[in-house]
Image (tube, rainbow, N blue to C red; front, side):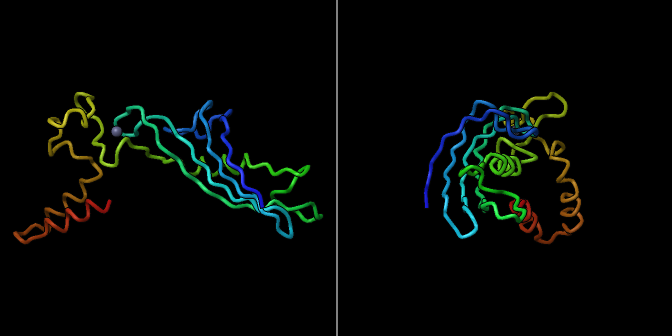
Length: 168
Ligand SMILES: [Zn+2]
């Protein structure tokens, strides 16, 4: 069994969405290689920083990305394995790339409750809380607002609604 901790410079950017791990940034790779009967079992933990912009308010953000995976690299045996030991080496690059890209968020946000941009002025609402009025509520809440109103017949449903909001 062998353990390695590697700092790897990213050459090709990983990801094509709003955030990506950029070329020139560094990956922290913690890998454990174990000799098993059929080959080498690789277990890796990868830490990276994805950079890009908030999907709601467009400011620059940097998000930590943490992934782990385990894969068996088989010795040549005539059987078809997806990953094989080549010249006494295991090539982790495509595994690392796939794991990192899959872990990137589709809707990255600067903070979970980022209120986005003001539809009229284009200002970032997090910097201008005075612009946040009930009419500017995120449209995705509109169904929920109708739900609360229809059930609000003087009973005490408000606390239920608050709870649902917190769960989202
Ligand atoms: Zn934001």
